[in-house]
Length: 369
Ligand SMILES: *Cc1c(COP(=O)(O)O)cnc(C)c1O
Image (cartoon, rainbow, N blue to C red; front, top):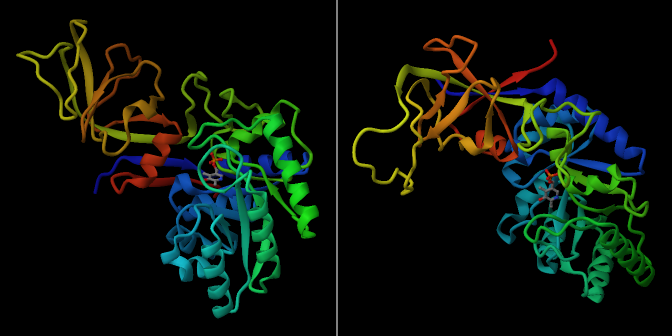
């Protein structure tokens, strides 16, 4: 049965993971690989694991259940729901936490399952998503002491996150503040904090610029090895595999969406008749470019939005999209496309996320023989 294909290059992903691990290690930084964009895909988790990153993180517990059989240590990135504590303890070795009630429930359950659960205690340094607010230092100390004194728990480290809800950038200043806070907490509690987990792939720009704070020794990263892009300045990095496309669209040729041509014809560029709105209630304007050759493709907005795709063939241009169709202009193409051929697109992070989430796209893997 036909589905558009998402071709994932596992060799490049594995290479990138290896490069990332080694590069960060040179700065004293241990990395946890985030697999959430692939939505629990076992093959991508395995590629990154084979690249040498042992801890794999997902946002959802059901995805950890899928990937843990590859032999990795698992981490739950989104703080646990009170309603899923038994599954969290069963499938996650580590979880990110900020609520005392949840931490106590994890402790109880870990005891019941005769396990030790590791807690990465999150501090909110200003981005306003998860974490104990940075000014509540007494509460941070209290939770650190609680975790330290609970036999079924261990303290994995103290973490923070940037560039999500609040779009707060990781900077030299907030790195210093986080290191200083951790130092004070360590002195007040007498508990050694093994890891200072400083953020996601956007923190890498500080390493790239040579201003990394040596007090920070841990990152949770997806985007860097997945795209080979430094996301603050949108810079393609030489040492990683990534797209050859211009930087203004942060796509990667490691992820190619292939969709079949279901109609090939020459049609006018302006619709004929009185114009209303489309299925998404949008009014549209059309430039009259005469009659041009175009292809109708068997994928649509409900699979992957076209804003998040870039045609691999530079001479193909996107005309538009409806729920189940994408229309491309192929008038200027050197390549002669035929009915039944594929047209290929590179994807950005959002496009990759959409393609991995939908049941309407089939994953195909490029791997070493
Ligand atoms: C998603 C996420 C990350 C990793 O983000 P990338 O942009 O893929 O590097 C790290 N930490 C937390 C808490 C996250 O939710």
